[in-house]
Amino acid sequence: MSSIKNKNVSLLIIFIIIFILLTLLSGNKVVKIDNAADLMKYFSRAVANKEIILASGIYELDPIFIIDETCGNCENPDQPVVATAGLIISGKNITLSGPEDKSAVIVTNSGYGIYLLNCEQAILKNLTITGGTRDSSALATDAAIVVKNSTAIVKNNLIQNNIGDSLLIEKNIVGIMGICGRENSRLEISNNRILNNSWDGIALYRDAEAVIEENVINGIVNVAREAGGGRGVGIGVTWNARAEITHNLIKNYWKGIGLFVNAHGVVRGNFIENCLTWGISLWDAGKGKPRGFIEANIIFDTGAMGMSVTSSTQDDPGYFKDNIVVKTGQNPAYDAADYYGFQCALALHSVPENFEITENIFYNNRRASEDLPNYDLSQRDFYDELEKRKTEIFELPLKQESGFYRLYFLK
Image (spheres, rainbow, N blue to C red):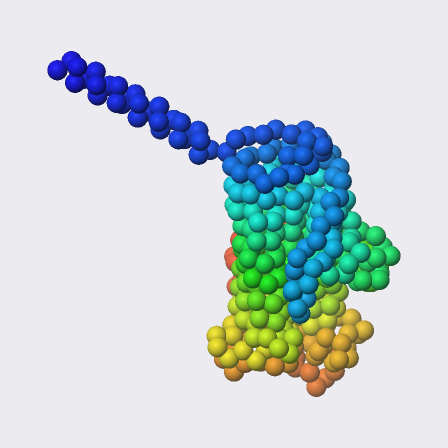
């Protein structure tokens, strides 16, 4: 009997040892890095099952010249593009993080700052990413973070001051984005502050999908052609990309949120404010069938139209409902219809029959001419309707940074 008991105890001990070994093997190995040279060296090859933790400090990267085999935002993507990258991260199950105060500052000195390429299950968090350099090719999809053929979580980062050379930007128009999702990529983008970058805050191109939530995307200044922050689109989804865009704050950009060509987007509960031109655009570019499910957003203070619809999609085209549109169409420079379209709060250029437009609130918007539609409520009716939406608005996570919220609820 005792021999059987001893045998069972031995088997139990062996089982526990095997379990502990498997647990240790399945976990990520932690690697601590405190200087740029070690960081660049570490990612000079593919990496698997590693958690890289950066100490506080400045990590000044040397640019790597690369050939991007496809063009992310071209009509014909099958053309190589010469570019630069700061870090190229490939492999699987990789976390790159800094202290919670984001005091690990990566100065990329490159076009594709952190380039996730053929990387499965990557996480970038608690980093400051800055100092991008605009590549000379206008076809390069320069961004602080570029994600291609990869799955990634990008959260709690400060992505700021990626501007680039002013002469190149004036020549090519395109600058440096905050985050760019490219072919065959799946992204979760949350709780980032994307500030003062010289092109789109977040852009998704062919075959990219993303959940984009609770990010502050602030151009700081929505300058014209010259280099500076706020150029481009706050969030742009184009070609056949798909996105769920919820509870973000977009302000001080040329344009707010765009669903272009064959894009599919759920756009819900966002603040879109102080845009040089339009707030939200559903646009087929004369060749696509975009779908937009646009609900409970606040569009406030734009130079051109608040919302624009140009789509021939008949199969489940989407809707525009329960939105608040205030103080749009403010700049007479965009009054001509051949600029962006009809200069009014809701510009309906081409609207599918079953595209639902309902329960929206309009107030204090400007029209280029009297023959354009006027959807505005009286001041009294507007405040009555706003009172009904108060609970819903108070639940929006980024309301304290919203000019609309401060004007109508904190005055």
